[in-house]
Amino acid sequence: MKEIKSALKERAEEWPDRTTGYYKFVNLKNNLILEFESESQKNKFNKDIFDFVLTLKPIIVCGSMKSGTSFFKSLFDGHKNIFVLPAEPKIYRNFINNQTKKKSVKEIADLFLNIVLSPTGREPFLLFGETKDTYLDFYKNFQSVYEITKKISFVEVLYCFVELMHRKKIINYKDLKYFLVKTPENEFYYDEIKNYLSLNFPNTGNNPHFLHIVRNPIQNIDSLKKLSSIRNNQFNFMHTLSVVMTSHFLSKKREDIEKYDVLRYEDITFKTNSIMNKISRNINIEFDDCMKSPTEFGMLCKNNSMKKKLRNNPAGAIYTSEDIENLTKEEIEYIKASWEFNLNRKIDENTY
Image 1 (cartoon, rainbow, N blue to C red):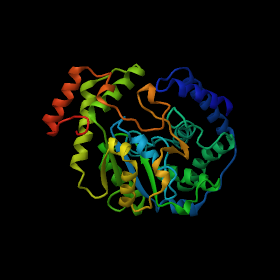
Image 2: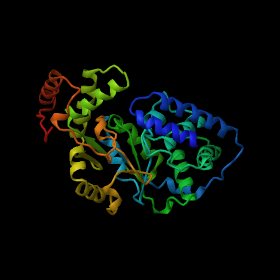
Image 3: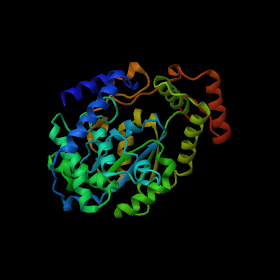
Image 4: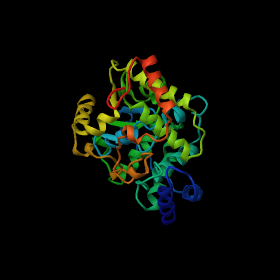
C-alpha cells in the first residue's frame, strides 16, 4: 500500500493530466487485483444489512461536467443519515444502459476498488485507510453478495459499502435514511434512472430526489475547454455548448417537478449555510455542521478547479470575468447569443 500511496501522491501533483503517476497507480492497482483474486477468503453475507439497504431512499446530484457537482456532493459527506458514494458510480452507464449493464462481478468489483483507492485523482485517496486487508474485505464482499443474489445491480454495490463500513465501525447502518450518488449529466437520463431506482429501492416512491446544479455557462465551458487542453483531447465547442445549454434547459423545464431542486453553483459557494439548510428541509433531515465543509469519507476535499492557483484551496471556486482565459472573444459572444436566442436569457456575472 505504500507504493500505491506514493503513486497516488505523484498522480495528485500532475492532476488533471494523466502521466507518470497515473500509469504507476494503474499498474499497481492491477497487481493488487490479481493478488486479491488469488485469495480464498470468503465474507459472510449479512441479510439484515442487505434488507436495510433496500429501504434507503436515493438522492441524485447532477449537472454538466465542471458545474460544481463534486463540491456540492461533498457537503453531504459525514451526515449520519446519508450514505454518500465516493466519486461517480455512473448508475446509468454501469447498471442501466443495455450495452453495458451485463458487466461481470469482477468488472464491477474492479471499478469500485479503483474508486475507493483514488476517487478523483486528487486528495483524499485511500478512503479505507492504508491497511490492505480492508480493501481485500471490500473486494470480497462483491463475491459474497453475488453468491446469494445471483446478480450485481446497484443494490449489491451499495450493500458492499454499507456492510464493510458498519462492520469496521465507520458508520452505523441503522442511522441511514438515504444514499447519495452524483454523476454529471445524469439529468439526461432522468426517466431511466427514476424508473431503475423506483424498481430496486421500494421506498423511492414515484421520484428519487434530484439535485440539479447549474453554473454560469461561460465559466463552465471555459473550464471544460481547459480540461480538454490539459488532457490533449480535441475540444468541440459546438458540442460542449449544446450539452451545457441542454442541461440548463432541462433544469428550467423540471423546476416545478416534485423532488427536483435546481441550484446555482454560485449560490452554493457564497451562501453555503442557507442553501444546505434549505436542502436539509427539502429532504427531511436535520442540518448538521458537517454540511458546511466539503469532505470525502470525512477527509477534507481539495479544489478540483481548472485554475492551478486554486487547487490547494478547499473545494469550491468562483471564476470572475477576469478569470476566463481559454475561450476566445468570439466563443464568449456566441455563448451569450445562443443563450438569449434559445433560452431567452441574458448572461452576466450574476444571472444566466
